[in-house]
Amino acid sequence: MNRILIVEDEPRIVSFLKKGLQANGFATGTATNAKEAISMVQTHQFDLMLLDLGLADEKDGFTVLEELRGQGEQIPIIILTARDEVGDKVQGFDLGANDYVTKPFRFEELLARVRVRIREYNSSSKQSSNQYEKILSFNNIVLDLSTRKAKVGSEHVELSAREFLLAETFFRHPGQVMSREQLLDRVWGYDYDPGSNIVDVYVGYLRKKLGSKLIETVRGMGYRLRTNSK
Ligand code: CA
Image 1 (cartoon, rainbow, N blue to C red):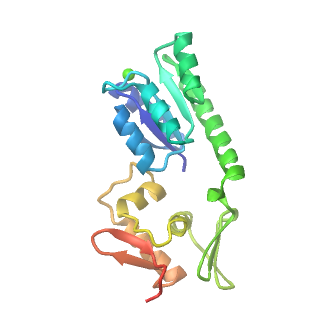
Image 2 (image 1 turned 180 degrees about the vertical axis):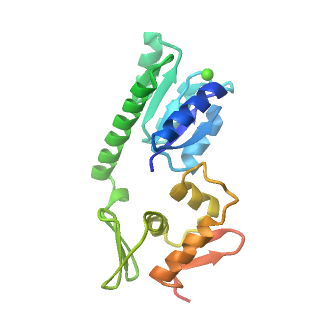
Image 3 (image 1 turned 60 degrees about the vertical axis):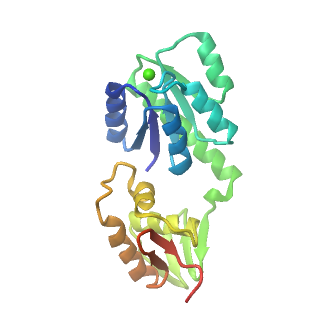
């Protein structure tokens, strides 16, 4: 599921975007000010940002762009604003925006642009980084990311789409403690009910299918892929 961060201080627009994007199969997160927007990109995994220019704090959308690009952050960013001055557009592109849409806008058009930017981003990261390699392995377990199939030794193991995504998340962060919140966020989408015990249930499934000692419970913190077999 692709995840979109909506950075916008106008509740009506946030709710409109959220509904529309979710109805089209995207997960969404929201931030109303620059500080929050930057920290959400740093702490959560998003595939695209919709960025308003006039925000709830003294910093504006240009600051968000500048700071994120300054940190080398590559996430596609579409500026979504009522400002239609050429100067603003130029500044936006200069600071590293990928696209610029002015309000009022047609949702269908925005959606089309969102899809194009995400597609471009995914195909460029596939070529340039090993974050998207085809195989992830750990001990005797192999996850094939192109076929979404798992193997333990030479045995094929059936994993559901969620189980696979959860396993993939652990395999990408061996030894690192992942909180329930992080796992919910990455596997089920940002808006999932944080009170749910679905993470624990799915960790149980993975232990059954991939090995009981594979994922360690870290009390009060979450789970981690066990890198030393004690
Ligand atoms: Ca605004």
